[in-house]
Image (cartoon, rainbow, N blue to C red; front, side):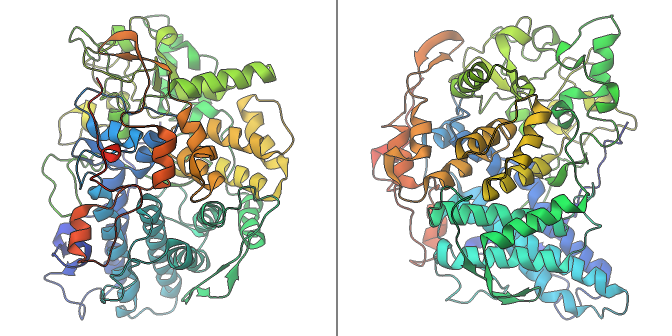
Length: 630
């Protein structure tokens, strides 16, 4: 069994950095060590690199103000594939889903975290040549510099996809001009893509295989993702197989400037496929922890529970077997976790549960109207949690419709969703839940076992060499499934969408047991929805297929509005209400905001007029304000 303690990039950055009230409250300052003495050796740059990456642990695992910081979780809740749901008090999740806000700074945490990551990357880039690199160390220097550029591009991409036009910070010395909000379309995306190109040209191909580092292939894949969003959303090239857009790059180390076209992006993706370094796992279920071998063994031992959904898998395809699960053959870039969570972790960008994949807790089951939450006789093999972001009725219904029309069964449907009424023996709904659909997310769901010591234990506690985090709370601290940021399946589907060549899409379909189809934009849209359900890609896909300022009849607005009128369970009562938008309509709120969140008022105030609130977020307008529905 793969050892569960992973090679996550973690460092206690509090010993190096402290926050001040400068630009965006995120500008780190070296405290005891000065720029003249640090970094002084390669190991110092490795420490800076780890600090840059560690922002991802807080994004992927941190719980601030009742909401997970993971932006992909936010985008899942904002899509048509999830509701806000959770308990009656979980207003942040429902605010996200309804495109409203309960207070002026509700979405500030990721704004701060992402700017913090950008600041750390800038420091890494600027100080790398304080070290006297010699001879063979040049390759190490270029790899570390490339990772700095890559991570700056990644954090900036997420920042602008969440908040739109923002200040572009490319130096640790933040000038007055740099504090000014700039156009994402014309200024920020050229820098993002230039950073990814620098990363591609500076990084090697050997890093990144199960160690959490980026490599050349990760940069090539993210060039495609960023380019496709820019071209689709800002340039309104909704069908890229027949359209094109060219962007001018910024000259910097690793990026000679010039332009980037669709043909360049296609060539970068083909470099990944031609490398032979990645391949699809043979079974879609191998990607997810519910297929672990311990649960598989219980399905075959005839002693207690048996989870039939994975019983037909070859054991060598189980999540914890070589080449599967964490570090699998299609994992290009991911957030990794380990047992370092503590209730009291210091530092500006840290959070007590930052090293646990807290998505498993947020998407866990809110079972138990009689205070028996998490009992195995109710939820086996899945564990308890907060029950936020439950799947919508729409994704199940649309998937069933696609299967019926094509006369097939897609393994990904039950590989991604828990059908509560038919998969769990005695599931009951909480008395304070809301916006329940009858389904739950299976992909990142934590797993319990008959062999576990307690009802709320995680299967990880049964792994060889296990030691719990210092939270001493398995249900909150012991979640170690990688969060996928880029899978090889995405490379294949992006290639089909860019070229119109269905061969790449057909590989993904074949693994799912779906009949191979010819290229059409609709076919690619469906395949992306099914393959990446609940991985946070759907919302920005919808946005780029719509284009900016596309109104209430756009692809995104229409898809979101189809939620209205669907029957939901509320306060433990099945089909108690029909889904309705809390202030107006999903189509209207999407059209008003273009899918951007409000910039935090505290940060706008801090910028003293240099940053403006996004359209659609006039907080005096009641349509923007959270309202209690249940």
